[in-house]
Image 1 (cartoon, helix red, strand yellow):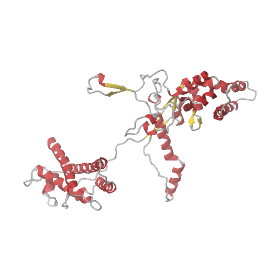
Image 2 (tube, rainbow, N blue to C red):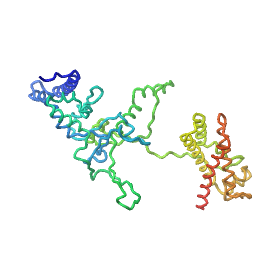
Image 3 (cartoon, rainbow, N blue to C red):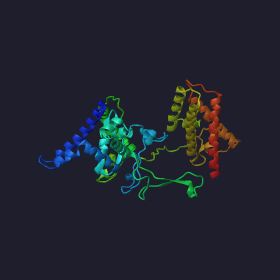
Image 4 (cartoon, one colour):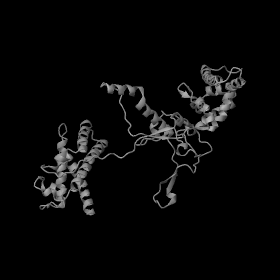
Length: 429
């Protein structure tokens, strides 16, 4: 006597029956009441007939996260399914950022896409594909009363994410020779990479941008902004977006997700920043170059960031030291840029009557025209480094107390950089 189905099996069977009934009704609505095809369709959509047929047709499809077709529509190599949650974490944006929140794409015969829709039906929070991959016993019982037939169908459905016909590239695919050895002249030192289109990541990115641009919450926030009212929902802007169309008039030939986007693939603007620089003028009527340096736009951004960081995180550990060093280095880099701009002025500007800078500052900023007045190059650079350290200590006063250790550390850092810069430009001359 056969074992009666459990309540869970009955719910699964009802899910399958309901989905097939909906599909059948959609097709019957297009036929006249006396069309002989109606009986044929009813027979076709019986679970006992449709499920084995679907298990055969699923071999014409592959669920992927990285596809080949977007690189070239005629490429016939391997696409891959790489679960983002299993990928190693990196410091750059990639498919690993998706975690468990991603959509599978599907490539293959468009005539078999109904099988993919079927396997995407959810039961208890998991898709029928997941149940197949987990070899769920209740799902097996719904597929067939015969254990071997059920196991065969479940294996076929579970194989949706597996590559078809082994791993292969194609002449239309892109390939990159990546140096993994030490000798770039040795062919054996290269690994041949075959880049694939991160279709699941692209789809998530597209969905996020669409919500940021056209979502209901975004529309409400824009309306609030127009009326001068507050909104908790932030507004995101994506200027200079480009749209890459894939598949032409037949986007389904590329993939299912590409078809859902009507072939649209959005590209963020990768443009260099617009450099807005003020005209460089000689330092006249000022007696301290750091008064002018402190008003530079980048300096006015960096100093509060450094001060805020030190006020909120006084923990003496490697992360704190590294972050502090990073911000100080950025200020030093800005000082070197400031120096380079002033050294680009016509020689002799520091000897004009309006220039009130000290001799060390004149020699540093206008080295070809200013007499050293007995100062050696090393003494000039040491004075400049000392002034920088004093200036930085002064900028960070308030809640913060800095003494000799910080002064010496910043003095040493800027001295290293000004010496390196001076050596570089002297060598060029």
